[in-house]
Length: 593
Image 1 (cartoon, rainbow, N blue to C red):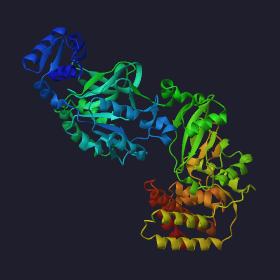
Image 2: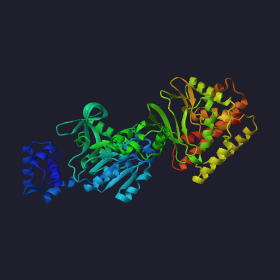
Image 3: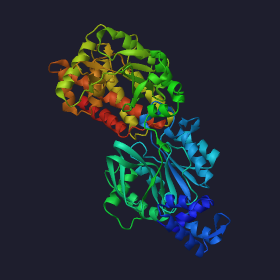
Image 4: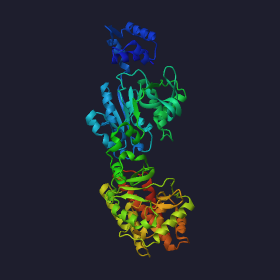
């Protein structure tokens, strides 16, 4: 630590600060502070005027290398622990006492003369655009925000960090008092003391407050919590190390702090020290979930302003504060869902995904749920809105999804499908795969086209399969269509349920077997075995022909679905490639029969 820089910084900020106050801040004795001030005056860094001490021009020049140049604010992530609020609003844009958390930090930075502010965005990036006009910030996009941890955010902001005096901030932190400064003498990580056991990142440090070790979890200790500052000498050494780590295979889940922890553990002598910056109680807040925010800001107790929470409160006739245990589920391909508790009972709220109104008829979905209600094979529906698609259903504690590669479980799934198909249950709408292919083709063409080079040839082949199916004997039964293994749940009492009936309609029963096979990424032999399991006998040639035809057609359909989604800004990785391959490979299998 540069004692002169620290001393001059404190006096720059308050020229009436007492020597006792300086001693506490610099962690020095009164005698040492007195000597330090005398030395600084002898070097012409300070001058005395009455009871106050001020910086000379030489003192300001000495401080110049320690001037904070900018701040980088991390705002790319989803904020999964704040669902459902973060389905609509990035966590950093949530309000605390009527003020958005990221704006509070920007204002605090402005108060100390830091105006060069870079915000790294990703999830719902457009929501941050207004900050450019309001505060003259820069936005940097992190394209890896959904697949990599915050190491990627520092990677994409590297040119704004390396060789700079820079704050590294989180958009969703809330600081009671302004803890930023015009000058910073050394690198530091904000820290608070936590009593008892903690899963936070625990810090060991020496008498100079240099961090000597970082461990995940501990007890009765100071932990990493809140803002960080990189000095120019630190960022110059650290960022090349971080860039190398970012390029290392297997680093996707790393926090940037993992890199720091590793370097400290290796006792990297070329890396300048990172210091602990202890903060008093109730100064720094990292809200972990909505319930913590409710406890801090009473506004969220009764009126979060969130449509889903308002709906739940209305359905259960309770205040929002009675909605507990909010947590996200793994995002589906069509919708967003979250878990919640009311009176110690668990439920799921489904929020329809963006653009699903052009893909799914919610009235048809509702009709299917009502049609199979007496079969008791679906999740229990608490609320269903045919217009909006919002659905509230029972969550089965202790349940699990069926395993597509567990033969015993898949036999049970096929048995449930047979039960459905053998009933007299009917609905007024069909799942017409020819019509759906035509419809999705139109959506793709209107939204940017279909990027597969040989799509015309593949499309012609699919038309041949449709003609083939027209000439075959066919039954019309209520089919689920979305018969992926994840939609079969096995409850704690070993019952099996089939959930999420969005695509269901009247169709040939073998389409459900075909859909299950391609969703599970089955090869031909696995698909053959699944059909035999469903039929409980050796399939006939025409049944194999139907299975392969529906696998090809369904693969083509979902490839088109994925292309459309990509055209409107939603990516699903290699899913389109796998589905398109089913279209081509299983067309060939049909032609062999």
